[in-house]
Image (cartoon, rainbow, N blue to C red):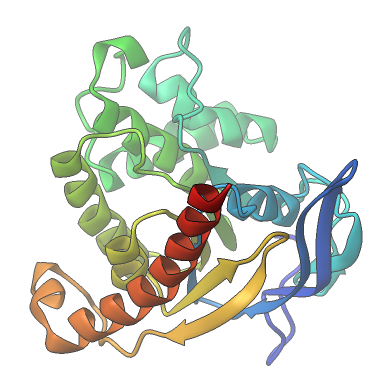
Amino acid sequence: MGNVAEPGQPRIAMSGAGKRYGTLQVFQDVELTVGEREVLAIIGPSGCGKTTLLRCIDGLIPLSAGEIKVEGERVTAPREGVAMVFQNFGLFPWKTVFQNVAYGLKLAGASRAQIAEQVPKFIELVGLTGFENYYPYQISGGMQQRCGLARALSVEPRVLLMDEPFGAVDAQTREILQFELLRIWEARPTTMVFVTHSIDEAVLMGDRVVVLKGRPSSVYEIVKVDLPRPRDRATLLQPRFAELREHVWSTLMADARQAELAIVKR
């Protein structure tokens, strides 16, 4: 089963985290914790380092400063118990839906019997039953993203990282997938860090919304989302949802307007 967080210990802890590429400092002095079964949404202007930070949490990219700990252990490489869902689906085009979902389990050393038992459960969980033998090119973008999600969930991660997971699908499919993910999370709650450009999505999904701003970026504000769970389409109609959305929007747009004025003055 691997390591688990001690009682009262955050599932993820970032301290003084910074990332530099040559002379370009992407983000710096990031201090964050994420609790067990908490959904943390990260939002900020394009180029502020949201995806880079997520990849550092996953251990795909090393930090230049500070540290990130998952379950009390410093992250130096990808680790067991952490899974990522990418924006571009990340599916193998030569593998079927079943084979793509089974990939993570196979890497983890699961037996054929375990794979045969577990994979159909997760295919059903994401609503792809009947498409097991289809290849990615034969299914829609939304179905491809469901497949990528099933692959990540099949290893039963204690930390799920999602990088703009619905950014490559149309608006209608995106809304459907948002509520599907909420349903799945309610059924199998886990620690989730969710990077998005959509303010509505951040407020709908998150227990807290982290706003990154500046160049290099750092945590500008952490907004607590005090909307009750479970959440559904009715959540979007609540006055509190509108208040939270407006607060985050105003914070980001002020920064965007300043950047636009700076460009005009040049």
